[in-house]
Every structure is written in C-alpha cells, then in structure tokens.
Amino acid sequence: MELPSGPDGRIRAYRTPLSNEAFPVQGSWRYLVDVDGRHFRLRDVLRSEAGAKPLFQGGMRGFYAAASELDARDVPDPSLVWIRSMSWPQGDRSGQGTGPLQVRTIAILDDGRAAEVVSDTGPQFICGSRRAVDGGVYTLPMISVDGREFSAIPINPRVGQPSMRVYGLSSVIPGADHGCEPRMDLKASPGKAVFSFPGLDSAMLAYTDNASVYFVDRRAPLQDQVFRIDDERTQVLASAFPGFTRDGRILFGATWQDCTVHGRCESRAGYVVADPYQNADYRQQVQRLGLSPEKLCITHADVQRERRHFASELGLAP
Image 1 (spheres, one colour):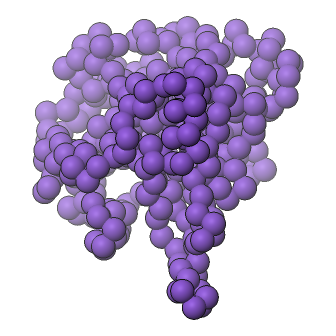
Image 2 (cartoon, helix red, strand yellow):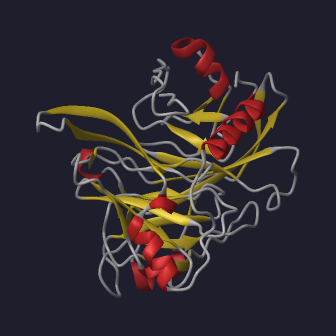
C-alpha cells in the first residue's frame, strides 16, 4: 500500500508475488523478503507488481522473519549489503510465533541489476547466556531498523513475569556470540514492539495493546512513561501492529467511526498516521521533566523531504 503525502490523497494498492507475513528489509527498504527467503527488489514489485521476479534467496525462513540492513559502520565490507534476519521455528499452527530465537546474517553483492549472496553465517541460536534468567522460549520478536537490537517476550522467565523486553545484538559481523544484553523492560505483555528509525535523539518504541497503539520515548526518565494514540471522538481501533516512517510518524491500520455533527456515524477502515510529538500527554510530560523535545512537530516539509530522499535512493518516481 502506498499512502499519499497529504490527508486528501488516495491510497494506491499494488499486487505482489509475496506471501502473507512477507516483510520489508528495514533500513533502506530496497528489498522485500518472503517467508521462504526469496528477496525481491522493491522497485521491481512497484513496477511489475505480481510479475516481479526474486533476486536471490537467503536469510531466515519460516512463519515470520523480520530483517534489517546493518549499519555500514558495523560491517567488514561496506561495498556489500549486509542483512540480519530474525525468526523462530515454524512448528505447527498452535506453536507458531513461539520458540528459541535465531538470527542469520548474509552479505549481498548488488550491482543494481543482479544480486547474489556472497557470505552467509547460517542460522544461529542466540541468547544462550540469558537462559538462566529468561528461559529459552520467546514470542513476538521484532528486530530494530539497524539490526542492533530486538524486542521479544520471554514466555517462561526464571526471574520475574513475562514482559516485552529489548535486548542488544552483537554489532560484530558475523556476530557468533549474541549475548542478548538487556536494554529495557516495558513491564507489560503487549503486541509486537516496533522500533523507530535510528539517529533520533528520542528513539521510540510503539506497540499495540487491546486495539490501542502506545509509544514510549526511550530517553530516561521518559522510558517509564507510556503514551496512547487515541481519539475518543472517532473511536479508533488498531487492526495491525504499528510502524514508524523515516520522518518519525507512527502508522497503523485501523477502523474508526466517521461521525457528523448531527451524530450520524459511518464505519471506516484504513490507515492512521500520527505525530507523536503532538501528543498532548507526551508534551506535558516532556515539559514537566524539563526535557528538550527533539522537535515540536513533524512538518509537511519533513515528510516531502524524506519522500524525495527515498525515491532518489531507490530510483523511484518522486
């Protein structure tokens, strides 16, 4: 789905050759990866839609696999595209989404026309050093945009209760020792916790819980504060876990009520795009704690700049 830059534009839908639970390779979004490990160039899918052909096969496979391009500062050869993917065993229907965590890192030689895997760590079980504290089974893992962290819920922790936590991954390639250093505990068990793009002073997480979307600013002391994206007037109910745009907005699929001043309401479905910096509760807390917000709001100029940058990077029409 391609969303317009403004509220009055139309949503454009593209047919794809991808399966349910396919995932973009986060970071540049140059690739989309299917659950069987086939990687497609995003540009090819936009132009050829369902007729797009895969470029290469690699990375984690299974019911769900989240993937990210690694930061150029972390990789041994910046001329290659390095992708770290995370998944769990597929299992039967009752066990999907729960199991020991694995990561796999591949390096891609891409000349803009063809691409091939030139390095592959193979699947690596991780978090062995956390077994005495968190147990060995997790659910709802999500890798960060830069591949340096992940979020997941340990199902049967030896210490404490199941809760969504953030862990660090090794920045070393191939990263044979992923100790899963604890970074944050949300002290709640919501849906997937999704990372904002790196490089922001106030790096954020967003997640769903009971059809509502919440976000957390990871800066102390804000990291203990949870802020809800809501609109009592329209009764927004999230129908999918959220994502962050590169300019910092939070986006999610939802249903809501479109009501007139006379009280007549119609049910709607589509996408909600929210600016966390304009959230009233967030602004009050930032002010109360004496913190400097990264920005007062995300402007239309910010959005247009990122769209032009994205199009230029991937050779798309602006």
